[in-house]
Length: 299
Length: 299
Image (cartoon, rainbow over all chains, first blue to last red; front, side):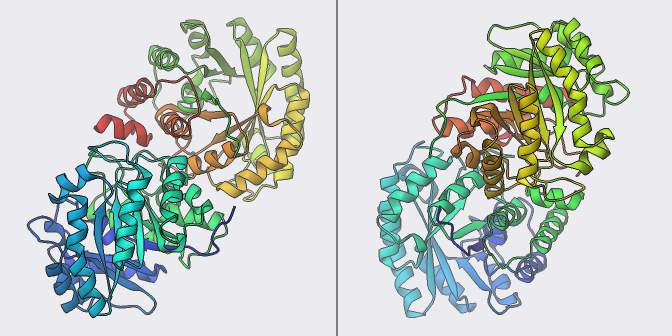
């Protein structure tokens, strides 16, 4: 047992959580969500995605979000920038940190962005170069680290290979995503074991989905391995596009409850976070997928 | 790491899961549920509760359930019998195994059954004696092992004390219940550590509720300690009476998915179990609280 003393939460609700919402959410609501998350003590918020509105209409207001947010001291506001065009737009909005998104599955990469994993990495090279020039840090995501909706099993070695490539290209941190939430604890540990042979454990983040209810068990297992950064989404915002009606991102409230119980500091006020989850789900008319959120609201 | 090779699931859906349902569920539905669970490979089903229909109207048909069920080879059909009267009635129905229900919290015992923990144990003595005469095994439950809705924190030593008393009175197994689902993994481990000093670990079962989403993380932690019996409820049937609308028992499907991923054998067919969860929740008009059940149904 070597739990980290502190864990940093990366809140992905405003981006990963909202991006698949069918009804357009107004910018003011997004800004209020981001502000409430910061007020609850979240130190890192992925606020927008600079992708074409043709592909992700929900993120079409990325400029208004990035320039409209009330910056709080100690909070990082990041944006997803899959290509140079997106990065330039994000830089114009004064973004301080961005992210790129790779996959550990060839089939997923082909179906999702119509190129091989290697080609996708090549496309990120100019993004990382330009970001470095602009003194903007880049976070790397790897999807399908514990399974792929098309390929099924994914070899830990493949995850390690893609993660290493992102790290060597200059990503300061690599977030390992169980995109379809199929992983279980031993599988998660084996995957982390493979990746940490290539990248220091303190440069890795766990991004787990709760589609099969395993996210917190998996997190507990990788916290035992020393993982110190966890991606999550308030109220579990964001479903699973591969199983309609099923859960997506693990809920931030449930993660904080787990960490509190393990004596791990996050700097987050759970009650305020839970109130934020209740508020946003009521505002956009979605079920609250945080069990902690539901339990606290019912008390 | 010393995971057990096999884990026995104790399915409590037909009793613990249904007992708080406000609308009376007809006996035929209960019997079909029990039969489907057995067909899915569940080896132990808590089928009814021999309590006064005044207190638990939903269990008023306990005789019809116990005498009406189609017994399958290799499946144990048990009943809750809180007192001698209940036990006698259960014996008349040919019950092969029964259970008694104690608490690790004085306040919970007082509010729930209007007597102290010690007095409740005294009341069980004749039940255990009579069961022994009748050659019927008795399982002991201890509630509030990780927290109490009235007292808050519960000392692991108190859980160990009550568990030991039940074991010494003749309970062949003691099921440790996180009745309000507030536990987290380290707390669960510490509690198990205290109890195993008094009772062999292979005589203990984990009965975790998912009210705060922690049940599977807690289960993973106590499986690491060597716990080999897990109580759960198909589709997560049964809410939390202390937080209306919140989750109660951990879902059997989610537990089986976790165990499958850990390479632990249960003898259960997950697909058939998930179909049973979908069927019963549709039949009684309740949300399916198994994430595995929802994800598999959505595929």
